[in-house]
Image (cartoon, rainbow, N blue to C red):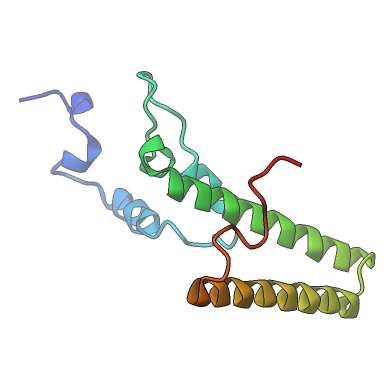
Length: 134
């Protein structure tokens, strides 16, 4: 029989009634979390003493997921900036919607041109950038 301090708590057979409430509350990790900054402690867990990450999301094996997390952080930061500028009155809502509409139109036009090039194969080189030095 192992001493109780060597056995992880999830393997303890006898649980006190007070522990049941904390288990129920901790089951739903998303309670009260609305933004990425609320999830930050769950996502960015420190490394173990051996140097390996405790969080599988940030391991180098899955760098694409890591890139997506960074993009989400950038998008949320940009959204916070826009919201704070609107709250301070530095940016008018109508001007912001016009800027977003223009950017959306530009992105859609570029996307349509790329799809058309993929279908017709008119150009073999990249459409919107050049690999040659300027």
